[in-house]
Length: 87
Image 1 (cartoon, rainbow, N blue to C red):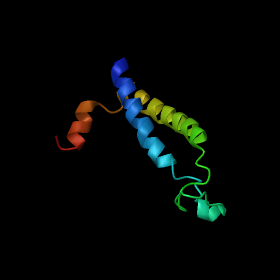
Image 2 (tube, one colour):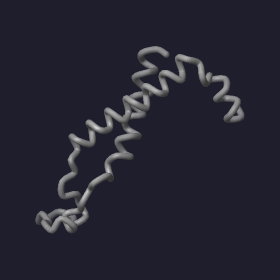
Image 3 (cartoon, helix red, strand yellow):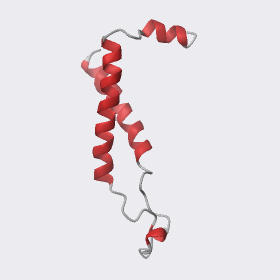
Image 4 (tube, rainbow, N blue to C red):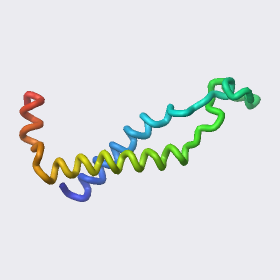
């Protein structure tokens, strides 16, 4: 796996994990009891984006490490994946 391939895979994986992590622990302004004038009551009261970005980075790194180990140890090859998908 080349460096550019690894970075591309990690980049896509990071964004997928981010969109999976975003809804965790979100409370709307209406649930929180303080609605900012001019905003939607369903808007997050405290989105905690920095914490979610850190968790996304950690989870993505672990998943990528597993993918990288499987790829480099040849536990599953690209030809086997193609065969499993019927290609």
